[in-house]
Length: 129
Length: 287
Length: 205
Image 1: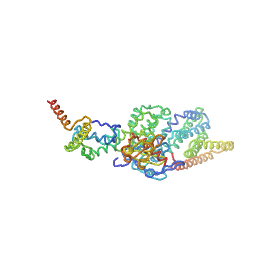
Image 2: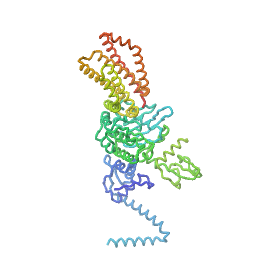
Image 3: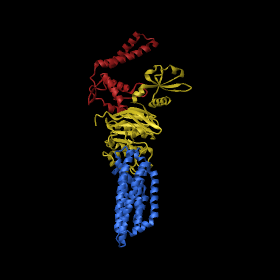
Image 4: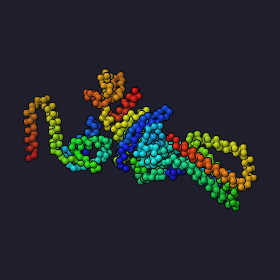
């Protein structure tokens, strides 16, 4: 998978790596049991410090996304449905917060928004047929 | 070679010359890392390197390189594992790259001629021209080729990238990156060009007027500090403990702060390692 | 030490072609006093090598390479012995050949003189090298000139007396003198090497 480190991003580099690998795992791009590149290899390939990649991997391990086998490396952990759900819920919450922020200037009520959602879903189902 | 925690351990190093002294310098280079030794010209970087390699003797303190103390008689043999590139010391200038190979073949037991020629080719260095006529960049590249061709575990470079054009510098930093893919390989790199070190180093040690102001993980440094620009009046409002260095002009103030010590309302400017170093150095000078 | 010797050989052979030509020319000229010049010139070569070392600050780099102090200083002594011996052997061969061309054998005085000159040159090197290790080539050269001046002075003052003494000396006298000289040469070198070792121990690059 691609990992892009951006200078424009205000987050520390290890956080960016952590986030991208985590997203990859949650989205299923990185499969269960897949062996991640070693801390050192990743560091050299990305041209960042080994300390940084180690921190990223440590965070991933803490979060339960990967597990380390001594002398072998870091493997993508078993897909934990609870974790994935948690991740998706967080994202939905974020989006909802944005919707809640944008609705008042347009004069939309909660019911209006629900109606929009219903219409959207019907449209999607129509496409699927 | 496993189990070596630190490639270099320096404790309480002291060395005095008339007009300059290195005082109480202590730092470690963890195995597998790249440490950048930063400091202005005359800060003591070359002295530190000479002490490291036992070219000169300390007045006080201890130095261990790859697990061996510099005062140990076995240290001479340990130099086989260290590749050295210096700023102003070379082979006599009437030698050619070919000549150098013959000399080095009989100096280092693990000399690898194939590796040497690979680097000569990669750097486009002529085999048979004397290096009186080499540019500074070419001399550096030759020295690096030599340093890499006897299977070293540690590379020590004094101002290796100074005076090189950007493409060559990039080439060389690439080589350092590749060299440290191996867990047992470490690099000590000294320079007064902070931006070079920023790209490739894991740790930064700042030497100023013979004293080591800090030796820290580079990323943590960038996370720990921030630069804030504000009115002079706002300056008083900032907690003095958070302010690490400041620049005040008639038009305003620029301060280096510890990130946590300043309210989030203050906008943070883009921060480079060079900024941190400059502020800290000025702070020391004014103290 | 082989590496160090190689480095010095490359250095001097490239830059002292003139010296080499002079040495060869002098060795092939008839008469043993010319050969003496050849050997003396040969004794300059380690000093030239040292000068080139200084120019490129080689000492600093060498201190960081797996050479021992012993190897570093001995390489200069050995370099000198080799070049002087080389000049002497060359001179000897050529002189013998020339003499043979004149249907003569090489006179005993001739090769004895060669040996004598070798001894003096070796002694001079032994005096000069520690001085140069300690204070560098520039200041060392001053000492060198003083030495040469002294020898010339002594030579001119005692010259005629020395020459007549040599003329009238018996073969036995001459050979004893030679043996004494050889012994002195060896002794001075041993002391010199010890002194150089001491200097290197405390040397700062």
